Length: 349
Image (tube, rainbow, N blue to C red; front, top):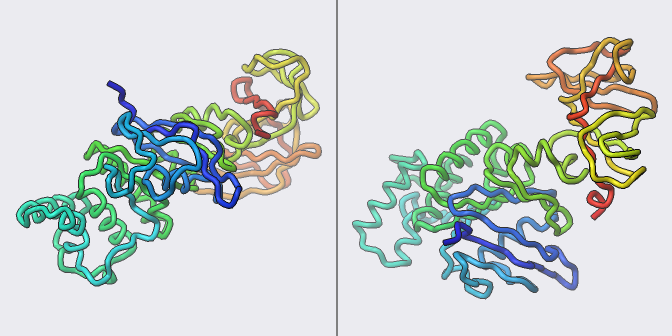
């Protein structure tokens, strides 16, 4: 039996003749926390809405537990959604907001009471039953929206940027809470965000989209350490990206120098993108570096310093716990396995 609970096959969505989702394929495992990540307008929310049934694909199919649900209305799917705007009922107290779906399904009052109590405990809102929605903080309202979605025991919970309205500290706290809820309940979460740190923190698997297309699917570690193209490398974390040429396998020329690297499979003298993470650039004495530069700026980021190094007509971003003063002359050192080579075609796709 397949462990894939949701699948999209050849999904395309057009609005007014413009393709906002372009023939994508993906699948989600049971009990997985999957995040769809990308910039505004990349098609991630449209993809989520097709899974939920709020949008019908222009072509392609949605499968749920191997059953085609492409044309099934949302209320018949074992899928619930939490929106960025929580859509709570302001005329109802917290208890009635959470109980709403259970009442629609005409469950006995004793069962409703038991299920609502369980949800209130799960989201740490015991004792809030009689409170009005407008008396709650943003974080508390978000918990109510999640409880209302979970009380119906969906097999899949869709979340469309649900933390976007919260302040930074509360958002970070809720990231941890959401991940803990997902693990405790064993429910599949499909989460949409444009926040890279959020995706890396919470996800088992990430789908990165851009301009309606999937750029890469993988674990947070794989996507960060082994981006498949320059867009992914630049979107996930900070990156130094330079034009380069591969004279031969495991050798790359850029920054007017030739470096050993660990990538191969390129044509001789193929033009490539060279990607190096800021934390992989080491500053050394000017005489010891393979390149030399001048520290242009220094910003303290809490756990590290972010420095911009001017080297020739290029600028390097460097993250280090050791600070080199602004204006100082430094050397740049890079190890072969810290140089990532990307096809130009993949970046421009």
